[in-house]
Length: 130
Image (tube, rainbow, N blue to C red; front, side, top):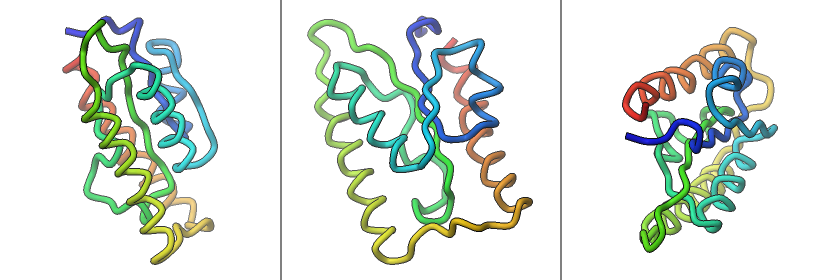
């Protein structure tokens, strides 16, 4: 398994942050794209992806929330596939934004639903890594 103390959770979802801030190292940012960029920075700094940056069936322009977990790679471990994946996810996010930007004024209920979906993805992963 993974050492939970080394896991870093990057999120722009306050529900995820509040639930896991005392269990994991959490980095809170404001926007979806910032999550991807922060994760990319970790991956370039020798971390591996524990969760897929595009988890769930929602397109990157449908939901304003994303949470991704990373973990320091072992010496000699190749993370080229993670570098390629996060770069592709950023590219895909930007392409979807060009097609149709993510709405900024969802109704509160819709916003809460998106937060809950994102939280459920993390909730389902946590038991697998600890």
